[in-house]
Amino acid sequence: MNDERVKFAEDLKKLGKLNANLKISDLLPKKKLNDNFISSPYLSLDFSKQLITEKDFNWLLTIPEKFDLRDSFSELLKGKYLNPSEHRGVSHTIYRQSSRNEDFELVSIEKDKIDTFLTALKAKENIKNLVCIGIGGSRVGPELLVEFVNKNEPLSIFFCSSYDLLELKITLQKCYQMETIVVVSSKSFSTYETIKNLNMIKAWFDEKPEINPEDHIYGVSSDKERMKAFGIKEDHQFEILDSLGGRFSVWSSMSIPAFVNADFQSYQDFLEGAFQADKYVLESKWEKNISMILALLGIWNASALGINNHAIFTYNYRLRSLTKYIAQLSMESNGKSINFDSTISPLETSPLIWGGYGIDSQHSTFQWMMQGKTLTSCDFIGINNEDSESRDSYEMLLSQVLAMTLGEDNKKENYKTVPGNNPCSVIQLNSLDLKTLGFLMALYEHKVFFEALILGINPFDQWGVELGKKIVKDANGKNDLFSNYFPSDFIPKS
Image: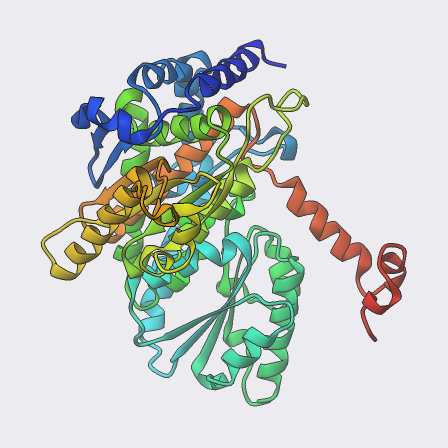
C-alpha cells in the first residue's frame, strides 16, 4: 500500500474531525470571493461555498505533485498504456485532436467516414427516422448530445435499449421501414441488450420482403467481424479503437446520431471544445485548474467530511441529461475499492452521483437536502448571459445555492429551520454551444481521472459491470442457476 496515500487518508480524517462543527455561513465572510473563483476559456467556477478553510484548501493543493499527476495527465493525452487490468491503452483524448496521429490512423479514417455519411444522408430525402440501439456509454453520451443540439428535423431520433423490448416496440409503431435507418452501437457488438434489440429490428424489416435490411442498418464497434456476422455491410461499419472505453466514447462515431440533423462542422466544434479543455488542463497551474479543484474538493468532501453523495443540477433544459452522463462517468470509473497494488484504498472512493434538471428537482429532492439529516455536496451548472430566459434560470440557480449553503434559522417555528451547510460549487457557462459542451464534458473527464490517481484506482476498467454480464450469460434461460438462490415463485416463468 502506498505510504503517501495512507498518510493523506489519515490527515484527511483528522482534519474532518477538527472541522466537524464548521459552518459555511461562518466561513463565507472570511473568504475573498475572487480567490475562490476560476475563469477558463468557456466557463467559470465559483467554489467559495465549499465547506473548507483557506488553510486546508492550500494544503490540498500540495497533493497533485506528490502523486505526479502532471506526468500522468501528459500520458493520458498521448493515448498511453493506462489500463493495466485490461491490458490496454486509453485513447479517448486522441479523438479530439485535429492533427493526424500515425499511431492512431484509424481515428482520422473514421472522421472522414463520418463526414461522408452525414453528407450522403442529407441527400436521402426519403429517410425520416433514425433508431439508435445501444446501452451504457453507447447511449448516454449520444442521447445527451441529441438533446443539446436540439434539432428534430429532418430526422426524428429515437434511442432504445430496454431488454423487455417495449421501448423499441413503441418506437417502431411510429416508423415505417422504408423511411428508417438504424445505428447499432456496441464496442464489443455482443452486449445482450443490444443484440436482442437488433434481432427485433431485423425481424421488423423482414415484414417487408421488398426491403433489404442491410441497406438500412449501420454499426459502430471495435469488432468488425462481429458486425459482419450480423449482416452489417462493410461500408455501413464504423470502427472504433479497442482502447476506447464505452463511457469515454462520446467523442467517436458513437455520437453520429447527434449530428444527422446538424453537420460535420458541429461534430468538429464539439471535439474542438474538448481539445481546448485538454490543453487548458495540461497548461494551467493546479490552483487555477478547474478539473483539479473539482477533484480535490470531491476527495475532501468524501474522505474528510464523510459526505457520501454528490448532486449535479443543471439549469438549462438542453443540459437535462448531463447529470446522467457524469454519473456513469464517475461511478463506473471510480466506484471501486481496490488500488493498483491490489490493496483496499484507504480513501473513500466515488460517492453516489445523482441530481438532474434543477428546476424540477427544486420541487422534489431539494426538500430532503434542505432539511434531511444527510449532507450533500453539489455542483450547480447554468448559463449566465443577457437572454431573459437564461437570466431567469440563472437567478433561480443562485438563489437555490444560497438556500442550500446558508439555510435559515427559525427559533419560533423550529420545523421551518433549514440547517444549510451543503457544500456547493457553481459552474457558469459563457454560452450554450457545442464547443462549450465539449469543454465542460472533458473537464469532468479529467476531474474523474485526477480523483482516480489520487485514490490509487484504475478508472478505465469495470469488473463489477462485467460480473453482471457474466451471470446473465451463465443463466441464459437456465432456471437451475436461480433455483439455488430464490424461492420457487420467483423463478422466471416459461
